[in-house]
Image (tube, rainbow, N blue to C red):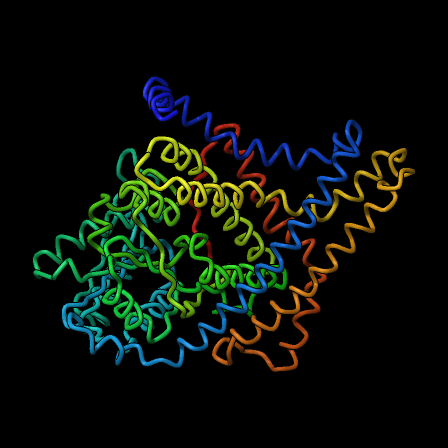
Length: 497
């Protein structure tokens, strides 16, 4: 199989990738359309599929609730620990240092400052933290912002630099190419400073990220106690809590579920893949030649690139602390919703990378078969089901009854909507657990409204079907269709001010 795959990819380099590229989105479109034509041509089989999918959804809901609760307990425990004291007693602590790369394009100065301030407030010695603000050269205000930031922060850290990424040929505009440019510059600076690369991490940080004050102490401890830190990524719980109460209800519902999903991943080791804000050893980053400059998705991409280039040696370790981020928020209600829609479009465009993951899965024999299969299969499922879930869960059971009245007269056809409704009602128990975990995780630090207003939040879940369709399923479906027809997505910055 390996020899055949190698021959196929060698003989047809572009066509092979294009073939693999369209398989996941075509699968999603097939599943979405299935209730419409399946109700007429094979209603019995479709009914059993709907029941199976509802049971699968119940399992996923229960798993999310259990894992989110478990991870939240670990976060609570970790927040009480003096990680600096634990790290200080380790033999090589004095050699430890951290690089932070913050890509920025049209971000407000105040937003960037909030992120830098959260780094300056770390318990870890900030003189051993090297900060690089990665601006885009095409941004008109970048020079002015860089001067302002340099004047304020140049003496606070071990180093503080601003880079200006030019629009280079054959590069795709976005976070990945910008970070790669900044990381190469950082490498030159750190080599000149004779920083020990064997005890250096690099963190990819969004410009709206607020770190827990113990983050880099915790990261240092994890690095120094790891048996092989040069094949590790570290991931904290990226939660959308910064402006949780300032965004529209439709966006708040999405932020609720996405935050809890990311929290839950911390206790699911093989499901945990770096996202948004993550860290790795600088040595590993350099050995795989940094981020790819010709793609939009960068977090999953850098992980799988490292995983397959090292023959499957790379793993992800959890950091049981919260890193709080913004949800999209613009000047008006409608613009905020549109910003969230475009953010979901960009995130769901991650399906465009599935082709390269499948190619690596086929060609890289050194990676353990079960491990690489589990990782790639879960990513494929997540991307394929992203637009599908809403259609199967929300309308398919009633659609089959509406389109095929004859089938309704059968025992299964008559009971299908009630059976589906009962199974999905059981998911409410998982939702109650999630509401509790969310309330517990969003401490007073993230609560800018009264306790009474917080208790009313669950009433907003009546908006779930609308929010789930317009701000999750629909943008993902359009991204899938866009990939099928071969139209590339242009990087669009999400407004969060």
